[in-house]
Amino acid sequence: MCDALSGSAHLFEPKVFELLTAVQEEDQSHLFEHWGSVDARDADKRRLAYQIVLLDQTTPGGIVSYIRRARELLRDSRDGVNPLDGYTPSVPEGVRLDFGSCEYKELQSAGATAAASAAFVLVAGGLGERLGYSGIKIALPADTARGVSFLQLYIESILALQEQAVARGQQDCELPLIIMTSDDTHKQTVKFLEENSNFGMNPGQIALLKQDKVACLSDSNAHLALDASDSFRIQTKPHGHGDVHSLIHAAGLPQKWHQQGLKWVCFFQDTNALVFNGLLPALGASVRENYAVNSLAVPRKAKEAIGAIAKLRREDGHEMTVNVEYNQLGPLLKSTISEEGDVNDDSGFSPFPGNINQLVLKVDEYARQLQSTGGIVPEFVNPKYKDESKTEFKSSTRLECMMQDYPRGLAPDAKVGFTVINQVWSTYSPVKNSPEAGRLKVAANCPSHTGTSAEADVYHSHCSMLRQLGARVAAPEAVLFNGIRVHLGPRITWSPSFALTFHELEEKLNAAELSVSQRSVLIIEGADVHIDSLKVDGALWIRCGKGAQVRMQGFNVWNAGWEWQPLDDTHPGTEQEQIRGFHVKKNETAYQDVLVAVPSQRA
Ligand code: UTP
Image (cartoon, rainbow, N blue to C red; front, side):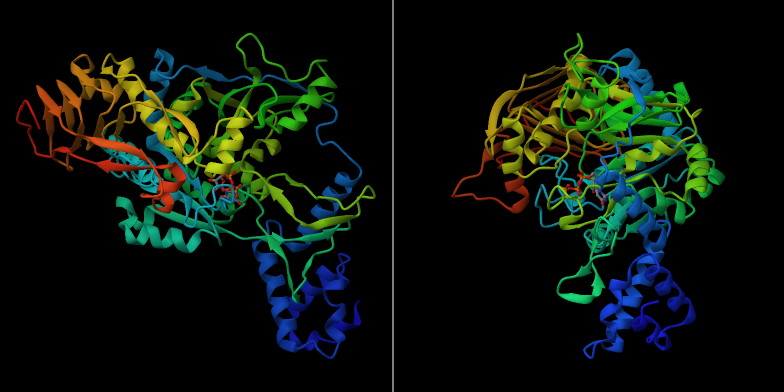
């Protein structure tokens, strides 16, 4: 044992000293070597010891297990071991849907019914470096017309599903929402919820689980990295969104959900306003196909830089359906079944769909799995080596884990599938990139995933739903904001309480008698809104409180409306506007928020 550590034993409780000794025995003497120096104060030693105790409590499996896992993964990384060696890929079983097709609508309605026994998990601990927004991403507006935040939209969607369950007779239905935060987002998330009375959810309905950072590693021998400016502090970095599973396990949630009779758990991300267009049909598909794991996915061009969902089979018969990173898929295909590697098929896309990290899991299987793994999903390490010897790193690294790697540890008989919605704009359009990063993405022929594209897709999907039902909704026009070209149709958006599914829309509006011009804004809020006949050329905001009813009959709106104007020197915009590249000039708005609308010719 290092003399310096044993010489300080009197400073610690026996349990703490035992832990420090166990850590030291994992080839970590360097952490304590300087404790014998004259500069080392007891307070500093206690500070480092306290950090190690905390790391031990918060790191999945504890700190000693983490060091051992790191040593193995770093050895494999240095030796160039490919974890996929020996596996042959194939396209897994899955469901492919066109947005608005009969099958889509059927599964969407089935999903809305199944949601009455679902829990929802929002992973919102990411730093958002690519976007560079100073606040939390879930507080950004999901669209500028309605102006509600992503978090409000998600909560409204869950509450709308809950209301439907109650209306079907499930009186005590309260659907849980779990939000994973991190040190980077936790306080702001708590404040945002408090300031907005949880956006209507009961306090006990929302649980926040904060992920902690893990210890950094300074070299291939898995030595823990001390801070360069503080030798009594271990460097830490985020472990990744895979933490969500160990936190859910530690909180005992799957057993609780199981006891409450919940059957499904849906995972989604911080900035995708369209997620319920994908989650509901995926939930319907999970029920129909009895999937233990169902990954929402998008058509993916061959070699496109997103993970692909693939079935992998080893010679000994072991099989798993998992996310394979795009840079691993090509070489794996070439070394097994296809000389050409990852190529498009007749559909113009790779047969391997692209994973978008939104998952529907079956609760009983999930509970069993977390019980046996402690919620630890397989980790990986990605060190940047200084040179060919692969011993030293350019900067410290750490183990990471991803939420979508959960199926890697599943029993072979668990049914794992995917649900692809062929029209990506209808289900997946996140705000991940700053305008600059977005322009670079477009130059590389990839979606920009900016505030600009996300907003355009919100209107696009709402317009498309109405058009598919027979409404006359003007075609979009190409516009340029922040140097990013998008197609902007009428700015139509509605609250989840009005409609989450095609079926509800059909019940609430007579699409044949609805027309909306290109420059128009149409916002609908409230459950009990019915549109018999309506023409909009300008801006109309329909607001219907709980218990109230609005019926639009022979309603004809014409006014100066709202304008989406690019930012310039005279109007540089707020930080949120700069992310999108425009501000909205509200010239004139017709409001309709009475119980029974009076027909009029001009609002
Ligand atoms: P992203 O890929 O968007 O990463 O995460 P990010 O960390 O938020 O943003 P960048 O990479 O720094 O630009 C996908 C989802 O996972 C969550 C994010 O909040 C987002 O909803 N996430 C990511 C976590 O909850 N924890 C993490 O450690 C990382």
